[in-house]
Length: 184
Image 1 (spheres, rainbow, N blue to C red):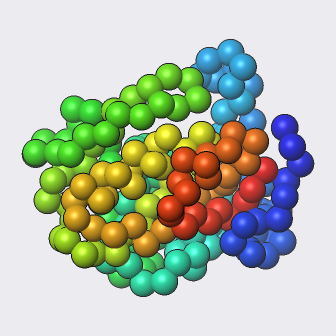
Image 2: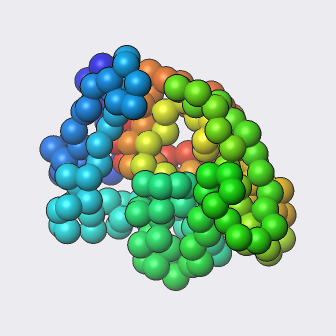
């Protein structure tokens, strides 16, 4: 793995150190050859969690809604929405939402999947911030942006706790502004 680079958002060195100290690598999970970034130690530390939520909320201006991508994105996006005074919208795996949905299939680093959002989640023209824990290959983020646009809303930006730059996820988001608290 590459060494940590400066945070793309300009987040201060203290926040970068805090994040690095509380994320652990889990080799060969969920499949051999994958190094999973486990954020549960960060989530268990109230000071670190607050710093990350504040950092993510500060990456973009006012928004109407904050989207969280299942499942770890929920944990970060809901408090970011509260901090911004915005609504929270979950993007879930296929078959998990009870009402009419838009669906989008995408590829990820170890397979493919389908995600969905309620068709009534957005009002046309709303500014929406997409939040997730990790930008890896960009497939999930691009699919989520497509769902927001299908709902008639505008993607204000994408905010990530961490970006794995060696997987080139930004390449799948050429028209969208994305910022990360930490880039490795």
